[in-house]
Length: 271
Image 1 (cartoon, one colour):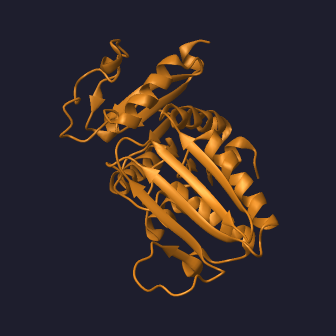
Image 2 (image 1 turned 90 degrees about the horizontal axis):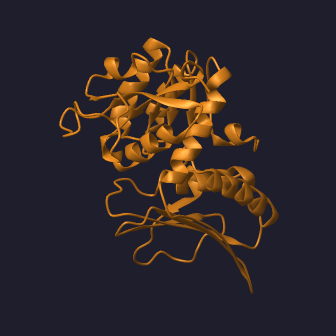
Image 3 (image 1 turned 90 degrees about the vertical axis):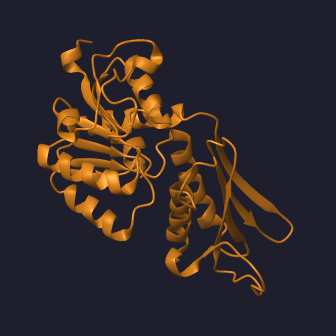
């Protein structure tokens, strides 16, 4: 496939762990090409070739200049922090660059700003880009509807020691999917950790527990605990490569989209 027909993709946080996975995936894709790379001014990778860590040359330098990184891009993939992502949203909106957003930890106000930007550009935003995780979400929706009474629901997630937000965006999304299937409000019924004399468990509650340690990429288990039985639905990520491949599927999905806010259920046809 000629390079001119490939989707031109920029990567935010290019020198981070996820950035490296995305760049590696792009170097092996036959329908996408790395067209820009950005990182914070303090990154030691600034000015270096974005693919240098692979022992190859992409011809794309890592830049601290957002405008320069987006100059040749059609889509930006962003797995950074909310503050940085919001700046990138504004820059992409101004330049008509589409976005795939895997960043987590947004406030409701920030989510509203992203939704507003989607009036002008096409955005896929999901707390987890893994194909397997999103299929798991669909299974949770089905399970919640079938186990709507008589089962207590707990969501347990584990991540590496460097993760700064808890519960994970994926765990929260799982809770939202379950709550919606049950007709509950997660803001009202979500219980985020327990300590001390908590009293008897409210049957309507959806519990969350977060574990942080080591280099765990991401484990999520949803427990449906009934009388005499327990059902556990678990997804374990062994590598960030799964997030990178899901992100490229999102890029392909956006190819014919002019504007709108989408998620991975849209990308995978699970709605």
